[in-house]
Amino acid sequence: MEKHKIVVLGAGESGVGAAILAQQKGYDVFVSDAGTIKDAYKTMLDEHHLPWEEGQHTMERILDAHECVKSPGIPETAPVVQALAERGVPIIGELEFAARYLKGQTICITGSNGKTTTTSLVYYILQKAGFQVGLGGNIGKSLALQVAQGEEHEWTVLEVSSFQLDTMYDFRADISILLNITPDHLDRYGYVMQRYVDSKMRIIRNQRRQDCFIYWRDDEYAEADLGKRRAEGNVVTALPFTDEPQSGSLGYSRDGMMRIDVPEGLTPRLEDGAQLSIPEGELSIPGRHNVRNCLAAAMAALAAGVDADTVKECLRTFPGVEHRLEYVCESHGVRYVNDSKATNVDACHVALEAQTTPVVLIVGGTDKGNDYTTLFPLIARKCRAIVFLGADNSTLHRAFDAFASEHGIALADTHSMVDCVKASAQLAQEGDTVLLSPCCASFDLFQNMGHRGRLFKEETRKL
Image 1 (cartoon, rainbow, N blue to C red):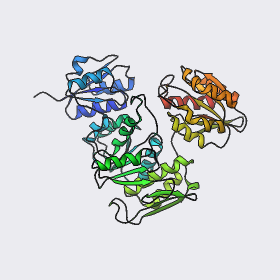
Image 2: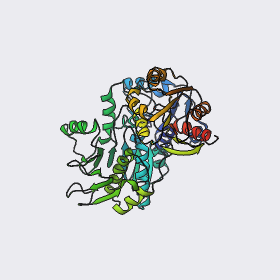
Image 3: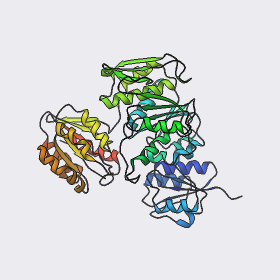
Image 4: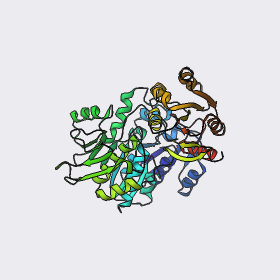
């Protein structure tokens, strides 16, 4: 009998992990990447005697597959993906494939902003509570590789992007979190916001009544879209949190206190009458947005069975996440903050709101259809200068030049991190903050947002 053939498109972290798991499960595997495969991943593929190609797609071999595992960065408009779809070959993602063999329960976190912080915080709390817990998805090691290596956990905490959700069909989260939905990746969704909303709402796909959906009730889209899905028969138990107390919301803040109050009979996952209360000033990560992230993480941890005292202690001691409002250093009286993870306008908005001194703001990179005008009122109040950092800053000039001139905000145009940091230091005055919060993807000049953030830190520490 012919083996089931799987083609894996993309040989990055997720693709290589999926290929190794597929081979282990007895599939006939072929890995194809139109770009250049990193040496470390080539070594992994060779060690497992997996056939691979780079710099091309051999269509005859690809279209002979019975199933395709596609890396999330490859859009559905790619010719190879369209050819597979026309042939009727099922196209799934790494998480969908790995979940077929995953033991234990999952907590899945999505949202336009705050995913990495909240995912890391949930993982931290469950670890401190003594649970056997794994971390994966859009963060850490490939989930498929963890499964292939026999790592078994009570809980696996997954950061899930919209691109990963797009290729999930049978996957089901035991606890899901939707932090927010704001415009992002619209270039991937034909500049149609509802398509992006639909992608995010796939987080509740297949969830049952005994499962939990934790979401920010004040979001512009989530509440209304949940109502639509209720009408279509979705029965997941919804656990909303909010900035201000509202009827039916479990988590909220009031008078500088973050609170969670669980009514009786809500869900077997939460103890009837359970309560958690902590002053917002005791949270280890500052900013209004992080109150929401902490609420979501705390509710998920309680639903997973962590006691309230452990949750509170972890909220006080969580060290935060690299590249997310990360304090780097102070030089000549100027603070430098690395927010390289801010790859959309809303994330930059949150970062600016958290600043209490005049700001030299660094923006730029690969534009994703951003509307920068939503930042203008905040920039007018907060920013002394704006530094562009990109291979091509023409879009930024069209967006900002007239506004900056009108409000007396200095501009600088740079095309490397070295020049960017130098220009920022020259524009900043003692007591200011230089904030790297780019609004854009990093792939024009850097390998990824982490590479961008690390170079920023290296250059600022040389000042």
